[in-house]
Structure formats: C-alpha cells, structure tokens
Length: 230
Image (cartoon, rainbow, N blue to C red):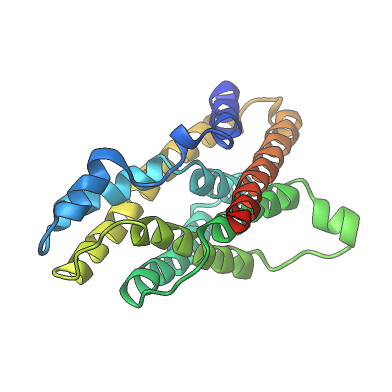
C-alpha cells in the first residue's frame, strides 16, 4: 500500500513538467466538443470523469485532504466542501464566460497542493504557531480548482446550443471521477494505516506531495511569464 501511495505522488512529480500528461482536453475529445451541436450529456459526463481521474493536480489535493481523515463523516464533509466550490466556479466560469488566466489559476492549484502537504506535516503550528481553518481552505481552494476546470473548457469551441445541459453533464462526470479516485485513495489509506511504519512514511509521502506542488507552481509560473513575453 505504501508503494501505491508513493506511485501516486511520483506520477505527479513526473507529470508536472510533461505537457503530454497535462490534464487539458485535446485530440479527439476536443474535436468531439467542437462538433457537438445540442445537448449530448452522456459523452460530456465521460469527458468530465476522464478529466478528473487524469488530473494529477486535483488528485494530489484530494489525496492530501483525506490523508489524515480517519472518520468517514469528516471525509464526506471535506469532499463535499471541495465539490461545492469547484462545481460553482466550473459552471459559472463557462456559462458566464469569466475570463481568468489559466497559468495563474493552475499555479494557485499547485499552491493548494503545497498548502495541504505543509498542513499535514504540521507546518502551520510548528512554523507559524497557528492552525488555519481547513474547512474554509478546502472550500476556497475548491473554487480555484473549479476555475482550473473551466479554463480547459473555455479553450475549446463550445457550442452555445445545449451548453447548459452539457456543462451540467460534464460536472456530474467530474464528481463521478472524483468519487472513483476517492474510493481508491481510501482503500489504499485504510490498508496503509494498519502498518507499523505508517507514521514514518507519512512524513515522506507528504514531503513528496509538497515537492510536487512546488513543481506544479513553478511549471505554471514559467508558462505565465513566458507567455507574457510573447
């Protein structure tokens, strides 16, 4: 189980500088979206689920959020807060054409990964002497993650005909993908927490998550400042 947890983080570390693993919508998926005329909910649900389960930044944040949550009630509360946040800005961003810079949004998403890993390592209490309200933080970062999802869709040629239904379908797909990923993470954590070495390796895992978050931030900021020079 420890190896699986590390594999999740290492995949993100490898993907952070590889545009081939970036979680944009391209290829045949982009062509399908461009050709869509009218409501086509099921394919958009598939695209939403696919986008979530391949979005390493979203997955790392969720993994960090549930890392030390031992009660199912707490998992449900935090994941619900995150879902409400990203659902609101995903739909609002696309339907109301809210224009945000995708590089900066994704950089803040990387910051959210850094935040959660730093929190899991006890950094706020030990370094700054206080503990932020994690419920507010998770909901707030959920809003940013939603804009991250919206920017990927705004980059496509979305047909206004059937747009609302298709975006609702996409959002439902995102939630399905999130639930699938969450179920996998919880199964891994349940087994890993039973091992005697969990606490020791938990520090290593969150150190890797922290590193992955910084790499994601750096990658997006390089893209932002590089684009500004063009």
